[in-house]
Amino acid sequence: MLSMKRQRVGLATRQFTFATPPRTIRSTSTLTRPTKSWEHATSKQRRIVIAVGGSDIALFALALANREGTKYASDPRDAKALSTVPFGKLVSGWLAFAFCSSPTWVDMSEILYSIVSSVSHAFIMQTFFNQFLGGETTEERVPKIEALRKNYIGTLLSYNIEAELDGSSKDPQLILVQTQHVLSSIEAQGKLAKQFCPDTRATRGDNCSWVQIKVTGLLPHPVALEHGSNAILEARRQQGLEKMSPTPDVTDSDREQLLSLGATLESIASKAREHDVRIVIDAEQTWYQSVIDSLTDELMQKYNTLDGPATCIASIQANLRRYPWLLDQQIRHADEKGYRLLFKQIRGVYMVSEAERWRIGGKEGQGPVCATKEETDASFNDG
Image (cartoon, rainbow, N blue to C red):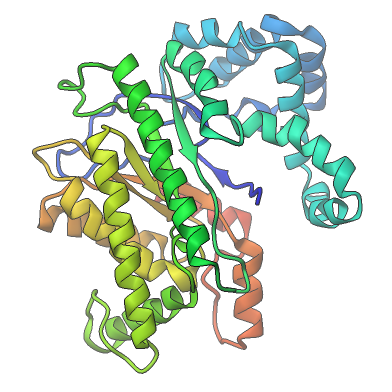
């Protein structure tokens, strides 16, 4: 399943150094330098970018970004790396971003794909897949990762198998296979980390090796996450508790699956610590998220202690109305428990499905997702 997200973290990312409080590290921009050049460029400027070609395109884009200004100093390594990008890669990247900048095309994309799947699949593989993803297997991606690491660019391996929107069940054997793929990705990143960053004492780990996981893809019945999340929310409403408490909605089967899920995540985090790799626990739909937050918090308390490297990274969706409250709560909790809080800040995911579920459920008041882009931008920028 190929999913596209508007988020700050991609496959190719450069590491930055931040001056942050020792207890709570907000890792929202550790991976990527935000630039506004493309989204604010005029049509004429975009045509120029395509016409120039090769290294001139990259250097022009970099100069334009610097002229408009960012809060990061210019890095000469960027110019060197961009100057080696093939012309075809730049063209496919332009096509991908041009497509994403059109709301009409984005809204039509799912329909078009189902109608002309063979043609659209080839187009997607040559544009979006080529731009945002490094390959379909870990082995296929290793040479690309090595090339990026030589230019001091970090990478994020993501085995993005998540639950279907209808919450349908999954074969437990398939989950075992998927878990093994995640562990193999960690091992591959670990080998590369030792190759490119043999001494991690100064940085407390290789900050350029990441693996992302989808929690809903790691248990047979995702509805167990929904029931558990409902229990957490109800406990908070009634008693102000953060832990899941037994309720009629949480069955024995749910508890068994959640315990098994916790053990799976523990094995993944342990493998990541062993190989000096960071894992990103990706955000998912709100009806699953409370349990995911709770499990992520437990992992961070164990693997993000102040006297060692930070292994686990949470994901927080800025387009959710709960975002400011959640961020404040997590920072306070990290201070109280004494662990490093690292998180990936996402602008917006699952907007359509969240709004549709709220509407179908006949719930009153505002839904969980910001109603407008302006509201989302304010939350993302000021959170």
